[in-house]
Image 1 (cartoon, helix red, strand yellow):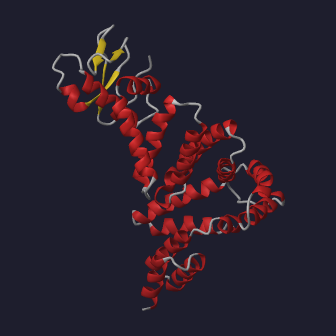
Image 2 (tube, rainbow, N blue to C red):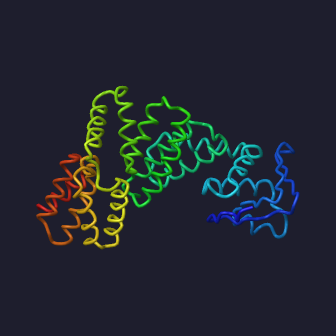
Image 3 (spheres, rainbow, N blue to C red):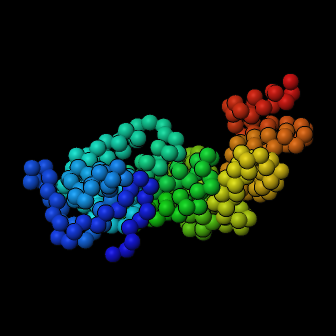
Amino acid sequence: MNRPTPITGITWYTPSPGTLLEGRDGRASILFDGIPIPLENADFKALAGAEPDYDMVGRGIYSALRTNPDCSCNTIYATWLRDAYPHLLAELASHILMLDHKEVDVSYLDRKINYMKVMFLLEPDNAGLAAEIGAACLDRGLRMSSLLQCTVMLYRAEKYLEMAVDKTPDDLNVRLRYAEVQYLLGRYENASRIWGELRPLIERPESERLLLRTERILAGKFPKIPPVDYLEAIGVAFACFQSGDVEECAAILADVLDDQVFIEDFPMPEVWHHLGLCYQNLAMPKNAAECFTEALNRDPGYDDARKSLDALAG
């Protein structure tokens, strides 16, 4: 047995060999057989030498899986949740549905991904679930507020979307997302091949955009480094800006924006706006105004850039 995965708020407890836990008036039972049990810290402290009860074990399993569905013994815990705590599994499913029906920030998106991964432990052949996890990971990886985790999230997206493509090769949306991930990871030939296969099935103007990207790839015109590396560099730059290192932020963003192919594919007005803020802090108002204007060229409705430009002029 591998060492249990450290999880914040969880203490691992190893019950006596052969311990049988029963609950729900005898309708549910778990034979632990030496498997470590995740317990919430408060429940562990309350044991006082006794074995954990049914509710304690349920809370611990539920917390551990929601926090880290990739923890050791995860499939066993998910099975216990399904067989002995169906009400908790139903609650998890209801949370997923709730998160599906509203705009969520990064922290809520992380929860949604974790909750779906728990369900996937119980349904590893569910192509639709794999596709949803992959799509959520792609969304998470491209969020401007968390680009520092872009690489990790895109590789996770690739993993789940590849599973979905294998099981449902005719699903257009899944293959498009998979191709996008391939492009972002710098696997340009894979992306262009998939786009070429799918383009006749896609309506304009999206088909025209994919044709343009495919033609650029075939002509050898693609970003100097994989887009994911630029995206993570932008995340580093934003972190520098937040810590007050505007010179380093400006240097990184200027380097990113020097790649014309990348910025053509990813207009990202936020990058131009941040570079403008850097120049403003460095007492370079002309350069700042040019960047704010460039941000507005890419997104005329970008209020932050409009306000920054107006403040600079006024």
